Length: 288
Ligand code: URA
Image (cartoon, rainbow, N blue to C red; front, side, top):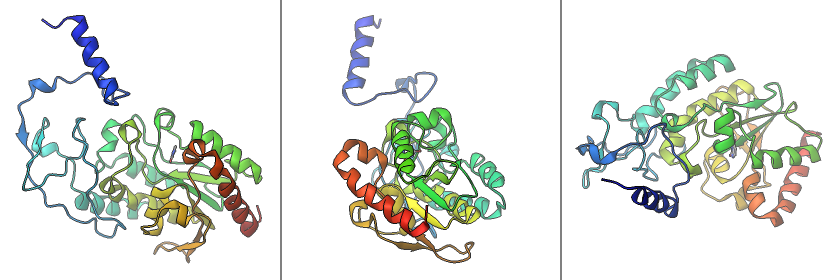
């Protein structure tokens, strides 16, 4: 019989190894599942996506992608037929759905209906966008955090509050900008998104940018900058410089100025001076 001390010790152990939240409504008794090999799928690059599939494994939670390798099969508690799509299938499915969307409402509906990214299974909400779709400035963050996941809106937590204060410094607010993220679903525990997750969702973001048709794109943080620009350099190299973003559905190349992520600025307040410089550069060029 399990006594309360055992349960408390197990809970403490989970906290000690960094588990800080439950991602399912019901606890799972993993010991009751019979391990079953996942059909090995050769890792394939995401067609058309700027980054190949693959990335961090996340074997601990139900419904998460488990990239299998031939050499060492992994095991899953869910039937093989319900395994998430591989990155290439997911990317192809996302592209097909996204390209058919002719309005933001259609795109959001297509995204909500898309099952090719396993993060959807663990997120509470699909976080599509906030702000003014007519705005000429489109900000793109990384992925929803806990507050965004709960409220279904991007940048509503502490880093969002800082972002609002930063925008206010140059006379901007959410009625004058449009905000979305690379990923519409929160990675559990706020871990970094994997390349496979990014590749699966990117076609929706690309179509999102086409439908908004912004005059300037502002990636916030390294994940966003590297993904949109298809560059390998980190954000400290990319920030504050002008690049071009092109997409077939846009009238022409859109200027891009990557900036530091507000969450980074909260951890490194000294870097706010760079963020301020970049905001002024943006404001000067676009007369805000
Ligand atoms: N960080 C992001 O990158 N996006 C959000 O929406 C919130 C926090």
